[in-house]
Length: 495
Ligand SMILES: C[S@@+](CC[C@H](N)C(=O)[O-])C[C@H]1O[C@@H](n2cnc3c(N)ncnc32)[C@H](O)[C@@H]1O
Image 1 (cartoon, protein in one colour):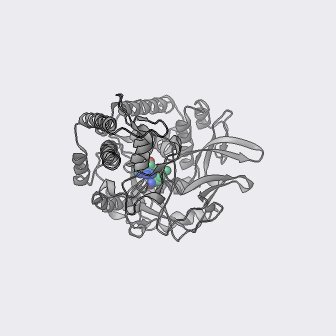
Image 2 (cartoon, helix red, strand yellow):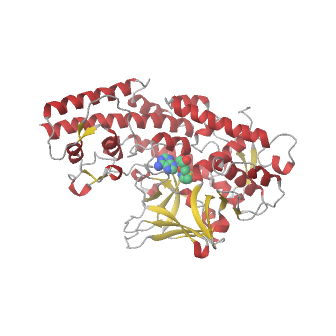
Image 3 (cartoon, helix red, strand yellow):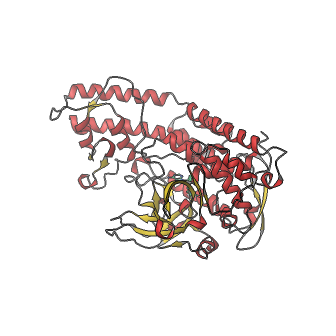
């Protein structure tokens, strides 16, 4: 594959009507395109600036000082008012098509666009609607054959119809939705021709499908790197099979180069939602691109969720019942409950410093006392639902976050009702577990400090490279947090 080919898609900037040559180069070492200097109202400018500005704040914050569960997108550390607001056109083009947003605003932060509360949201007994997106604005594909789609923009007999029809509905959902997205971009007066300008470009998308071989090496995780190579090969194979020279122009122009198709698949992987919807009497499991809702970032402790309102075919973003959200706070949803960082990376190109579902591969026989370990950190609930019982935590005690919950889930433990831990046994077990942690750290060729230094000293790094380095850094910080948690366990319980 010739990865250095440039794809130029001309788009108009809404504010200044400047003709932008959209740089779709799939070379992530690429220098930032020139047009960012000329147009001050495109998504690109804000994205890059915001990332630089916020990165320096991030590094000033020690990872262990993060408040419980508030570090998912790390935008909480930056006042929302400092993040750039989305272009007014972004709202307008949706409002005229009956999209509604209540008490939320879109801003560009370190993780691209995000959704923020524009006023205080008081807790209520019922979940509150904050966004409504009509079915007509979404791109929706049924997951089962015969495949159905909304809105009905593809004429039967169009070759892209046959291409989508040739895919496997369950395993090829990303290839199918990518085809539908590309068709929507090409379809006269379709909403996605406008919305597409607010999607991340090749340079801004964190999907590892767009990562270079060098970026994949930075993961320091050969399994994940190899999975991504296979994913990329599968995508290319599909493009080669369907975009050969004998294809009619109306298909060819949708993705003239493999890079364009890989970008569309990465949009599908990082933005589409699996959802069960009811339209009339028909209940369908669907793959959907839901504009505006796809700007919500992920959190393992989200304050919002999605809902389908079948009565008037509205896709809704709702706040959790009883949830208080302060003005400026980020609104988030959970993309993948119960998944480890490698799965988040594979699908979305980011990892979480405080993912409560991450695990460490302990191999020995050493075990610590479950009940006493949990009680030291005020962790409550059953195994699958551990949570930090902040009510009993010391004031200002911010050590416990998702990483400590993950530690609670993965540390080998024992428990026999009321039998207390025997200090000498526990010390031995703790030491062995900490040694295992040190061994895990020793397998990496860099330390967490070195990773942090690389991130701090290379502000112009590509988004995929940054995501890869953060991934291995998050792993190490998790291991270090386990070591520290075991220290605290010894200090607080045994002496
Ligand atoms: C559905 S989109 C969300 C909107 C996106 N931020 C944007 O700019 O368009 C998913 C992408 O957002 C970013 N993202 C979402 N949640 C994140 C998080 N907690 N940490 C880092 N990046 C996140 C990742 O790049 C991911 O692939």
